[in-house]
Amino acid sequence: MSLKYKRILLKLSGEALKSNDEIYDKQALESVSQQIIELTKQGLEVGIVIGGGNIWRGKLGTDLGLPQIEGDYMGMMATYMNGLALAGTLNRLGFTKVEVYASLELKTVTLSYNFKEARQKLQEGYVLIFVGGTGFSYFTTDTASTIRAIEIDADALLMAKNGVAGVYDKDPKTHPNAKMYQVLTHKEVADKNLRVMDLTAATLAKDANLQIEVFDMQGENNIVKVMNNELESTIIK
Ligand code: UDP
Image (cartoon, rainbow, N blue to C red):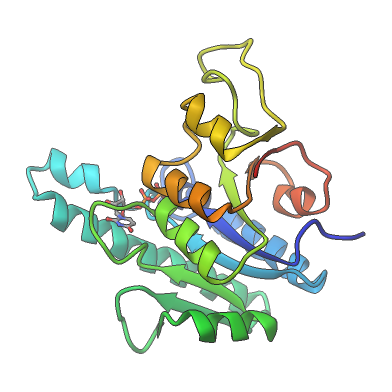
């Protein structure tokens, strides 16, 4: 089997790690980790940006009357927990070539982000987990994923969705006749106002001509499947 890409940036939302009523689900952590291990065995170089929505979102802070900046930093901190949970699971499953790179310094458990070092580590077969988002409030993990994908020189940004197979012309949850696109250009995404990612991230991706692939990670081995051309998805290029 030959893989679609040599180096990817995988964007995982925090929801990918949770169960219905707990912030973490052991099986979800293991499934994601096993698939990453499998893909590295197939020769794929993998960087991961992890979100924090299973623990905290900036909006929750606003609902509590907190200033947005505090709420956003709390969200960025949530991504550290998720990154460590994923790194710890990979280690427990016997995969130890893992580094966690942080946008905001947290010594002892993470390394300070450095793109040159990150590229080198990817070449050496390390799985890299990027935490702390962009390190700035008012941004999102989608924007962090786009920046990291560009900086590590990834062949594509893989956007793992929970229960949505790709990009549609209408919301498939409310429109049963919604049509899924197989391939789109960045210009079409902008012209049709399609919500693939937030506008800041979409603009960056368009300017850098970054290939994006949107797929549903809910399904057995879907991350491995999409990398082996065995799963439907939407490619934006
Ligand atoms: N966040 C931020 N700057 C960033 C990335 C994230 O301020 O560069 C905050 C923002 O408040 C966001 C929260 O962290 O709501 C959690 O990240 P996100 O919601 O993007 O995670 P996901 O929903 O993808 O799990």
